[in-house]
Structure formats: C-alpha cells, structure tokens
Image (cartoon, rainbow, N blue to C red; front, side):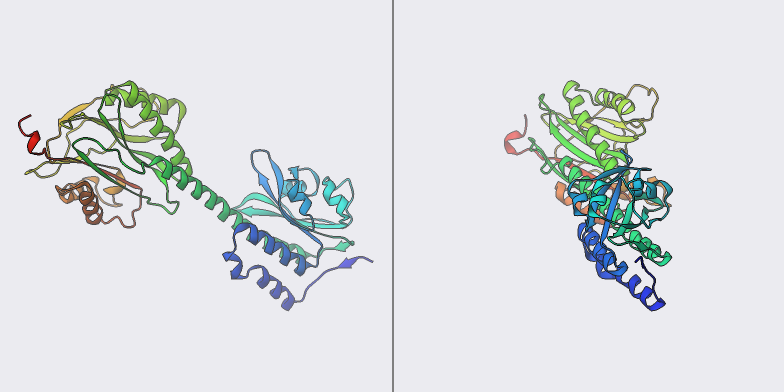
Length: 411
C-alpha cells in the first residue's frame, strides 16, 4: 500500500512553528543541522534526511549532515551537479520527487543499500545562490504532497541562513587570527625612542587592510610603517599580510625608503592585481636624530616638537601602490627629530568623515596631538577624534624621541 501525506491548516501552522522556533538560532551550525533534520523527520514522517552542501570549485555536492544516512557523512559522499537525484535538484534548482527509487535515478550506493523507496528533495539557497540540497526519504513507497515540498523548502531556508552564518563566522575568525598574527604584539625597544600603537576595526568583520609595523634593521636604523590596503575582511587582511612581509624584505636590501616602496609597488602591480594600497615608510637613525620618510599615496604624519605647535610634515606624496602604470621616481625626505618630539603616523579612518573635507579632519588631528608620552598621545587623539565606533579601520602609531639625560648633554 502506498502511503500518502497531507495536512490541515492547523497542522501546517504547527509544522512551520517547529522549524522556525527562535531557540534554533542559539545553536551552532552542526547542532542546528542535526536538530532540523530530527524535526523534519518527525514532521514529515520520513525515515531519512540529509543535507549536502555545494563545493563550488569542484562543482560537487558533499554530504554534510544526515539522519538515517549517517554513512554518507562518514564517507564524505560526493555527487556532481547534474548526476543522480541530488545532482538533478542542484542542476534544475527545483524540488524533485521520486515515488519509486530505481538505480537509474539514484547514483548513491549508500542510499540504495539503505532501501529507500521514495524521495523528496529541494535546493538550498543563500542570497539567491545555490549552496546545497536537502532531501528526505521513506523506506516504504510514499506519494509526497505539495505541502511536504513547501515544508522542506522552509527547512532549506533555515539551512541557508545557518550556512551563511557559518561562512561569515569562519571568514571572520580566519581574518581575525591573521590580523592578530600580523600586528605586532609588542613594539621593539630602541635607544632614545618610546612607542605606542592602536588598531580599531571599523566594520563588523573586525578586520581590514590597515596595519602598522616597527622593526630594527641590521644597520641599526628603525623601520616604521603605517599602511592601508583597500577593502575589508579576510581578502584585504591576506593582501595586507603579503604586502607587509614584502616591505620587510625590501627594507633589508635598501636603505632608502623610496627605493623600498618602488620595489614594493612593482610587487603589488605584478602579484596583487587590483589591490590599491597606501603606505608610509620611515627610517629613524640609530641615534634617533633623523627621520627619512617616503609616502606612497599616504597622508603625511604629524610632528610636534617642544615649544612648537603640531604640524603635518611637509613630505612629498607619491602615487599609491598598485595603480597599474609606471609611476614617477619615488622620493624620500629627511627631517630632524629633536629630543622630546613626537611623530604620529595614522590611516585615513582616523581623520576622514562622511560629508566633511579631509582638511577639516587633519586640522582636528593636529590640534589634538599633545606633547607627551606615546600612550598619552594615543589616548588623547582617540578621545578627541571620537572614534569609538569608526566607519573605517583606524591604525595609529606614535613614536617619541626621549629627551637626553644629564650624561648625554654636550655630546
């Protein structure tokens, strides 16, 4: 005898409530998949339920969660789009019902060995893009109704939302881990210099392409970098990491900031096509008296000296990195760094505001920079520029040359 299915309006409402229960949102993805499959087996009175997610690169569906077909998941069963029952659903992007399972219609040997007689499957979408297939089955012949297909599509919607959350979480966690590994956990010690830095993400992803770096070179000079890769999220963080590492390498082979940025620009244009970046690369002499600086499309740093107001350094700004055509020769500028002076490097998220000229933000910054310890400068600037909830990433690096002690006078 062939089993049939159908539902009254009250029963249909109960089913919908069961798969849209708000408590499901508090489960992690794996537990949510298991719970949804348990509920759909009960609600539709079926024996098997499975979720296959799309491997975009291989164009195959991969068994990810199952009830009654657990072996599919253990063996990481895969089926190509267009092949078999699940592949047909993925290809047509429409529900598919098989009342009498045959070898011709089903290519999964696990499914056949289980003895499934009837199948119903629906595609799973996220933001209109196919991400997988959800199917259920019975061990006795069953004529699935339209209401069954609609119920399964509702469950598929929940799966799509959960998968999107998982992808976002994985992307965010990977990017956060990458960014933490690339931003210095501790700034180096250097004679006659004090340093402090801040980084604040401007987006919900918590990561972006802004960075700062400080490193001691074999010559004794100190390399100082503040940079900004366009974009946000994992991709920008990955590009930022490669650019940061490349600049460190070029800093070892060139004692001229402009030449190091020229080499970096060549690398970005060749290997990071489409990635626009800005950077400030400065070198501070071993005795701390001189700064050599080159700017690749980056905002000029602020310098404040004892008994003088803070000012933007008059440094020539060359084109950004990765603009895709041969740029004019890059230039380095040498400036004095007197005892007690403070150098402030930053990214544009610190000073840019929507609907406001950049000059206004720069003026706000220069008027806010005090003559004090690097930590004091960071705290004062962050408070004055009101960036508790910035709309863009912010990197801030402050370096102060300490005043000479009594034994240093007259040297």
